[in-house]
Length: 75
Image (cartoon, rainbow, N blue to C red; front, top):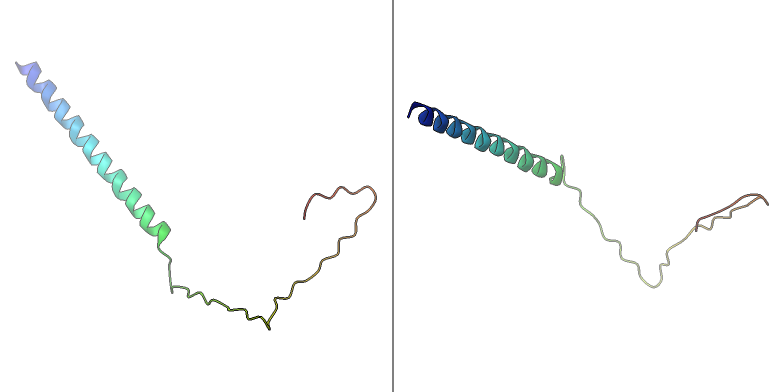
């Protein structure tokens, strides 16, 4: 009888440790998620630039000069 009580106390203690550790891991995970997804400081406002037909976007042309022995893999 005494060994049964001792065994049940050990099982209850292990259960409490398990629940405690699970709660700690859950709190850390939620804290990490909140810190990772919320921005720090001032929220940045994004401005949408509308392009009309009169305004054409300007692109810079890049000229790539290659030697005879150069292997070029890119756009």
